[in-house]
Amino acid sequence: LALSDELTLFALFVIITWPDANDRLFELAQHVHGWGRSHTVDRLQPETASIQQWLLTEGWRNMVMPAYSAITCLQKGDFLTRLQQNMPCPGVDELLRIALEGGPVASLLNADEGEALSTCYLMLKTPLTLARLETLSVLGEGLTDTDWPTRESLAQQAQALLASPEAITLLTQAIAQGEGYALALKLGLDCSQDIFERIHAHFEDSYPLAALLFDVDRYGEELITLFTKQLPLDTLATGPALELGTGPEFASYQKLVFIVQYLHAYPHKGQELLLCALQAPVVNCRNMALNVLEEWLDAGHTLSLALQIALRKL
Image (tube, rainbow, N blue to C red; front, side, top):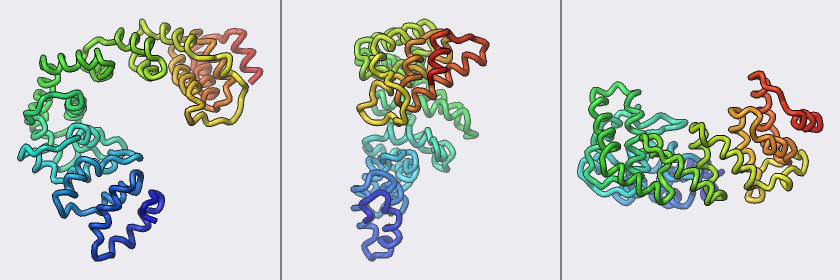
């Protein structure tokens, strides 16, 4: 029963009473991947080196949200000691970044060992990687919200690493391979043209990158035109229905609702996309289009005759 993520928690109340409970918990944790893993990790005791290693490399990886277990795994895996002793720990950058971001749970920046962990992490002599740059960026931003005595010196260390020639070279290479765009923009490297060309050349896989360009005024209308050409609008407007739009068969509708959400900032643009969305069978497409039109009207814009007719029909 415990192997079913929906039932793991209830089975744990029994399992923890067994003589070999911790061994069973460790075995179980490796075979569940949703809430079951999160609940099991909370109760698993780091009695052996192999359990500690697993907690740091795999224990926080779950299909719900890794942040729920990130700090728990850092603590039970005795991560601070490993950093202080320069012990290898695969996945250190990703785990720390998730713990720092927090999300629905408290960030590592609010934990007792947060300052010590951050200090040791910044002192690591390992080569820079894209993953480490991302973690350094999150750490640098988060330090401003702490009251640590060392926050200014830590922020300077993080910024020095992010601005180093090694980091710039690494990001330049990543951009050439179609990676690291968001981080590069955050650090002031203008790769907007690279992003646009990537979307244009690999639309199916790269269209979500458009989210990075809508803050760059010169690309907004070009992206709207690109999506209008790429999407089979005539075949998508089959009429309203109650489809949720999940699954691979709705991939085109997912692209449609993605681009429609950005039209609120472009009055009178993307009309073909809006007309299609208003007649899409996916509920969210219609709602998103209505939200855009409402914002246009609230801002004092008028709707074209075609849009007015589509609204009456809807």
